[in-house]
Length: 89
Image (cartoon, rainbow, N blue to C red):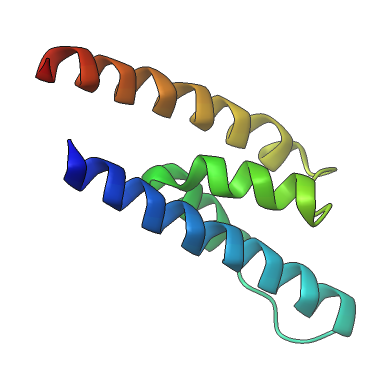
């Protein structure tokens, strides 16, 4: 279980930072991080970081594929982690 906690902590931090970097790049007109990458980071466990990045940086909040999919991924990840935690006990 400690490996899962470590993994989720790292992937969520990386995802949060990536959303912040992309927002900064959007404001300055620089090369952007592809939406596919942002969604992939959320899918592989970084949904909390993505959700936090969307809220804190006001980033991708108007795009339906983010506004819908990131919260759905977050709920799914919560269910998966809860099931895993209950099985390990």
